[in-house]
Image 1: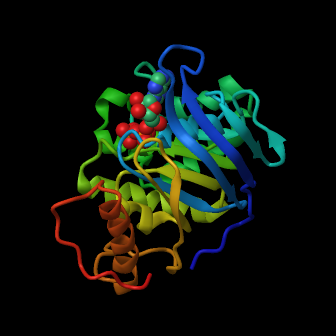
Image 2: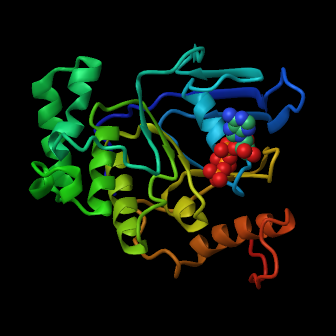
Length: 274
Ligand SMILES: Nc1ncnc2c1ncn2[C@@H]1O[C@H](COP(=O)(O)OP(=O)(O)OP(=O)(O)O)[C@@H](O)[C@H]1O
């Protein structure tokens, strides 16, 4: 079991946070019912739910990129009233700049955030080495495979050592094998410093494979209908499907989806006691 060098995550409080889009227009749309969640410092939390249930809306509000209709969000005790800056954000699209090499893409933080180049370069090289990507450092994004681009993007998300990491389906565009590799990479990088991670995914297996805790959301308008602590040892093995405890968590979430009508016409195993 890898021990972190230091605990570097911060606590996120989400209190009575809801969202109505177009509240001042003719047809307001209620995207999220009130949500109350406290995410302790250093926790890896996933959010799963049907398409359109409001997962990205919640994440954008935590990031301060979208206004709330009600409630309050604090990150490390500070109310979120504008985009938070001490954060790593990753989306499905890797968003690397074509005219910069992989290394220069990671070093963007030096230019944007005014961080010390030598410190950042040292950390960047260390991360490229840990992900066995040294050979990709001087290549341009169009010379890299999709999986490599996404892993370079992961390095860029982590290199400035943010206390909070927000990830919205970051592996959605990857093939199954690469997805397993990137998931393993993400866990090992997270274990080094334990930032607080909010991870949105459509993959129940991926959520169970990575998380300390999983929020299951109802279909739109979204609300949290289950809050599951995942008590499995780390680092988690790459093939998780065989483990009975792992399967029990996956079944529990699939049964929730079936009850809510998100899944239907499928055969689920008898519910076990995760
Ligand atoms: N700016 C907006 N104006 C109006 N409606 C919006 C806006 N942004 C999102 N919505 C709606 O709010 C709902 C929640 O969207 P959101 O993107 O948060 O869902 P999601 O759970 O992340 O979906 P997916 O899993 O498909 O990415 C959807 O019905 C969406 O159409």
